Amino acid sequence: MSVATEDTKTTDSNITFTQSKTPGKKTDLKALADSLGLPFLDTVPTGFSKAVLGAISQDASKKYGIVPYKKEKDLLYVAMLDPENFESLNVLRFLAEKEKIGIEVALVGQEVFAELSKGYSGADIALSDAISSLKKDDQEALDKKPVKAVKDTVVYQDAPIAKLVEVIVEHALDNRASDIHIEPIENNYRVRFRVDGILRADLVFPLEVGRAVISRIKILANLKIDEKRKPQDGRIRFKPEQGDYFIDLRVSSLPVMEGEKIVMRVLDKSANVANLDNLGLYGRARMILEKKIREPFGIILITGPTGSGKSTSLYAFLQILNKEERNIITLEDPVEYFLEGINQSQIKPEIGYTFASGLRSILRQDPNVIMVGEIRDSETAELSIHAALTGHLVLSTLHTNDSVGSIPRLIDMGIEPFLLASSLQAVAAQRLVRRICENCKQEETVTAGQKKIIEDLFKSIPAEEVKAFKLKPDMKIVFYKGKGCEKCGNTGYKGRIAIYEVLDIDDDMHVIIADQKGQENDVRDQAIKQGMLTMKQDGILKILQGVTTLSEIERVTEGNILVDEE
Image 1 (tube, rainbow, N blue to C red):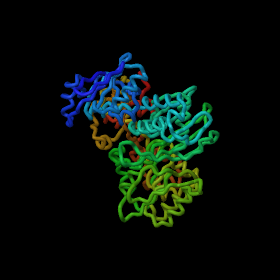
Image 2 (cartoon, one colour):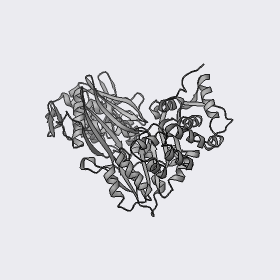
Image 3 (cartoon, one colour):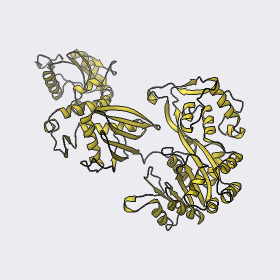
Image 4 (cartoon, rainbow, N blue to C red):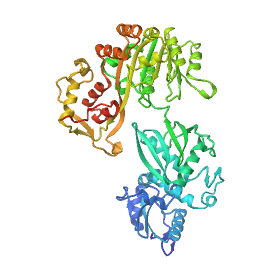
């Protein structure tokens, strides 16, 4: 690096430093660069790679206003904010002598410097720093007192390992991940994120780094870091770098054959609760649920497997019911979203505070509406039915494959059919499918056999339901998919929407449940007679809306749409 000056000049074998008087205005940087014979970067240079950032640490970059942007053989190119800063020049001199490289400097303004510095947030940089730190003597590399020694791994309060953990969580938030998996595989650890319901690998790092990351997370979650034989559960409160709010991470550790696995569920209590529109509720299903949640008493159930969005739907219903004149109390495990004006209580089974015991207490709190996170056992089921029969509106969830299956399931739990018929208002079954990315959406070609299946299913749907989805009965059948782009992580999908089937418990259904003991076939026949759309039919309408794809409906409904019958 050489800089001409009118004052003093110092020369080393690899670098030449000069003092120059810097103009005070940013607009003068270009003129200054010209006067010094230096390049001036008004945009991020083409070919910039985050890999080169490892030459200068993030802390040093921030402190001294220098950031590397290119490397060619034994020459490092560095962007600098202030060529008059002797501390910055000394850092570069030290780097040049230590690494035996030449350094070329270019002047930049704050905006370009900030853009270049964004590269430090990447997991690859954090991982590189973590690996380097573990190769060095722990005390010398970090100059920090160790928190705890675990065999050969030392975990520090403020170290590259801590930065790596932070970057992993930040990356999960940026990608809207619901879960973070950190697990050993052979001689490495890998990080996977569940985004829109699908797990995808994102990062792989050496075994020693993985162990340090696991230990760091366990410390933050107040878990025993020396206990690797038993599963443990804990929590971390995390503040994102950008934002004035907190994210809760529910941490679960599990011993596995290769070591220890960590799963962190991301609980963003500040997130906006979905409304009925963006849930995907249309037509008859929406009409029934909007009517039933306004009943003064009874029980409404949402069914589906884990991760099907049941809690999100319940929160949307609670938002509608959330009025000053109603006392609304919830029992949850865990509390996933904060709802202002609603009394939310988290169960703690370890101290005997379960759904059943909590429900008994809630009934003494003069509630109008009760939300029970999940009916898991016969005691909770009986208490929920009792609450519904004594003048309370009860919202809850149940694990069944469809809406019809909830009736025999509750009867198997010991609920008398006549009590169930008197208390149950509606059952909604749902699944989550991925939305097509709007940025890379394009038409999709399907086989004639697949198209015929869709057309036949479409013809079976009542015309009023088709209109409710803003479609026409005589419309041209067009299919869409996402090509894949930067905004959707090259998946072709971004976000999710639910597909529903809603069972209306009307007078005829009362008779079937009470007198015929809720035989599944009888209930299903009556539901179809009512005009209930199945989840597959609801999915077909969303396909024709251009919201999701054939493969997504196939994935969650276990249908045969993709089977070519030609």
